[in-house]
Image 1 (cartoon, rainbow, N blue to C red):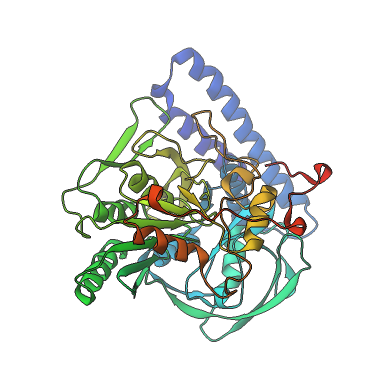
Image 2 (cartoon, rainbow, N blue to C red; image 1 turned 60 degrees about the vertical axis):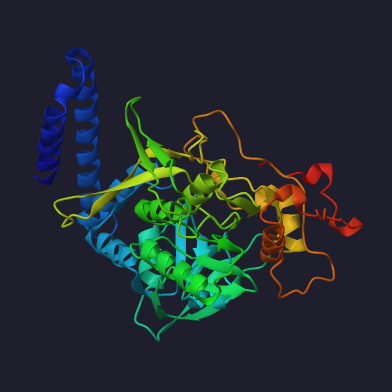
Length: 453
């Protein structure tokens, strides 16, 4: 009976789409789709009858839906009703857990970024690490939703997470869960300059940014420039990225998203009113800056409104639309529907935003850039959507600058160089360059060790 219901549903879906294509082509497509959906019903029936233990048909079908969508690209997936609810909670700015943004890559659960101020960040977790087990249970074969469920829990409870970092042994980290309140914008004065950190893009980011800018200008009416820190910011809401960009721009396009059809283009434009009054801006980015962060960086760079300092960003330039199913009662689809392009028409996807002043935060990070197979980026996904413009992400190379050997280990060299840039009015041509000096021990790998990007 269940098989017949599935087949009946498929027939309705086929009938609803008949007007979209020519009759001849539709006939062939309909026949093949009908046959494959009948095959799907056969497989579900066989598993229910013959698997070694009793199965849950709902979980089977949810897993099939998720697998179908994840085969498209790394960012499309199915959300069941509980996952959809959690997504809404996170977008609203509060939930209880360890403070990690995670994704699935070739069957592995990998950290996109630890969230600012969260327990995972304080425990030393870094972007790109793989979660191999939780409380002793392997994550092999688990979905992002299943791992997220295990990481979440009541505030005050602890969870033991095993992380694997490139070139190191696995390590167990005990993390105490907290209520993660994602106040996305913080700021402080750095002498005559303002420092603004945006950790994520949520529904409150635009308002919080305006408040922080006003507070900085109130604290120092003679402010000479602003550092906007987007490092390890994994993104968030498109509207928030547009609002942040608009805060620094008077006019012009911020970003465009282009879909499957030539006329499927949506453009977002700035409105008059630069909240900083035209102060010089330096934007800090790195390979943990993704999606909404890259929209802001690309907009400010293309309008020559800011100078990029740091390392090439992640390269996540695709648009996901969340489509509730039966008003969310059956969950939702998060499906890639377009690519992002900067105002100059450059694709963000796979390529990322390259810095104007390339600076590694540490000498260790400079070594990682020189062995770019260690860098976690969109280009590392085997099924990543292409850039559509023929360009490629830059491969292994030594960054232009890194901290000198006598620079304090707890210092922030990228921030230091951003402030140096603002000291000369944000004019890169006036900045004294400090090229990376590589010792013999830090030289590039031998030919047989050269990584593939």
